[in-house]
Image (cartoon, rainbow, N blue to C red; front, top):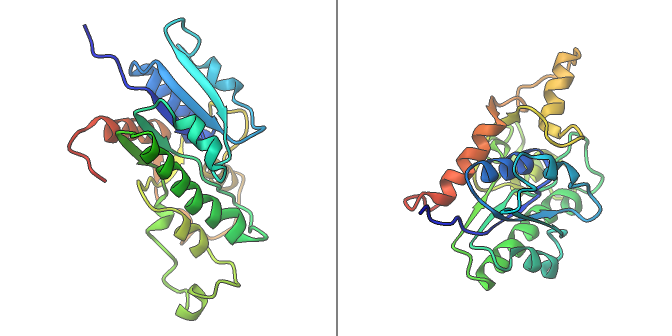
Length: 222
């Protein structure tokens, strides 16, 4: 008899990568999945994934802002693994980058890690972005460390872990996500330069498979 898969939590489960991760987990025999979503967002497409409504599957939705420690704890409780995917991402310049990008990403990750520690989670897999590794080399040092001005560095600072490149592929969710929107803009004739934005591409299915591999492989420690 095959060993039963561990119960896992996916944050940002109804987003582009999160949705494909849920699908990949179901495809690989995971039957207990806590799908953590931003409060008020729509998770209905998750239940259209093949196998999601099978009698043997428990796909539970938890509304949890990553800045809400108690809500995150409820989503993580009872799980042996956590895939932390949730993090803000936008193509628009935020009005308050510290509040809109850096705080949710950094404090949100700390909340997830604290919840994982509290409930003795075996492994946490954090998904970030290649953007965290490649800041614009032309940024002057004084600007990089000037917290009063917005640069892409704020986004880079907020993402540290597994680093997929621009993630593309079929959409499971109803709304267009930021990475696919970049491709759409290019196809529609955008003249914006891409020197520090287009950093290669990876298929979303491969990202999801890599996440599960990192969770399952006993020799992966990062």
